[in-house]
Amino acid sequence: MKFLTRKLVTPADLNPRGTLHGGILLKWIDEEGGIYSACKLNTSLVVTKYISNIDFVSAVLPGDVVEIGMETVAIGKTSITLHCEVRNKNNNRVVCEIDKLTYVRVDKYGHPKEHGIVWREE
Image 1: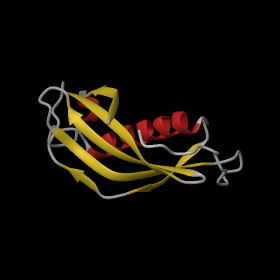
Image 2: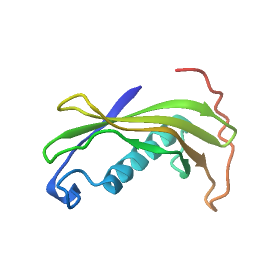
Image 3: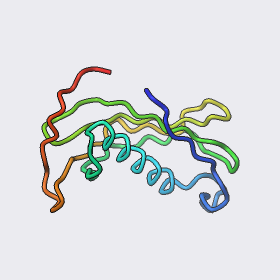
């Protein structure tokens, strides 16, 4: 698992309980997944196709730093499927896990486009 992105949790990222808002975290995960996928597929045109169940394990407090990790699970003709883990850098706790995120390479009209990448285990 490669942890390539770190985010500092600020007051603007909090929910009414004073912990990291789940929607903010999902936005960060989706952005990182899209960037990771675009780099792997050598394109800037990818869209989110699927996000499986999300298991929120522990809360994140203001001032904590979260790390977002991605790894490739599979590559199809037009798609890439990832596994994601988010951890709190301050205490090394897992914050959440997502078994599968799938991104699809598309053309300028939004239609799936083959990427020609042959998948090899990382």
